[in-house]
Length: 308
Image 1 (cartoon, rainbow, N blue to C red):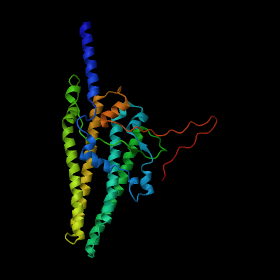
Image 2: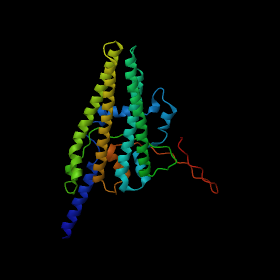
Image 3: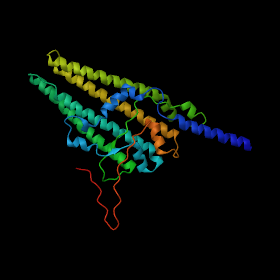
Image 4: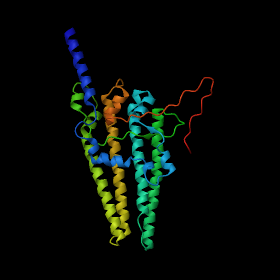
């Protein structure tokens, strides 16, 4: 019985080690070269880096938070899935905030012409865009608070800005190798089976955003030449905004599923940095600077408060 038992232990250890090795993000091709990754990078560029950015824009980015730090601060591997998924929700909310900001700027560049109807039509679109921006700010605040609570971040700190970007390239699950000798749920099987389709949808959504942006530029140019009515420009603008929203929703759904799959592969003994690498490959190497310890017999300094 001992040789048989020893053999089983060896097989199990090999299977676990192989699962840990194969659960990494994509190895085939360069994810950064995909159009979806390029588009996502553009959407996640900080508003503060744009010409004409405001102080309010800059305040959104004063507290960078890598995913690894969020997991480490929580100090509870059982909360990994919730934290990772909350992190991607905040990331998508930041991208949507930028899209809504740029949406208003595009509308403000459109010349309405001399017809009062054109001005009224453009006013409707601009008011709706401003409402979208207000909603985006509210959604971002709610998502940030969820992440603060789950990661147990200090309440006096500014709200977090997720510096790690969601995955937009293909994800190799290696499901057959990892779960060859391990039981799993139907939900995990479904994720492994549908992730390729989710990525395909993501790439198609990116192509749709690019096409909608081109159509918007053409409609605006034609309107400036008197060849198209203002309604054509507003419709093209609305189509672009809709495609951007759908792209971000697809990105979020893709990464939420990846986090759930990785959680099914990795147990709580897997280090946090290894878990992060299973989601996005190479995490951002960044740490929040820590204040020096207070001197003896000196009162602790007050915690910094987020600006109202």
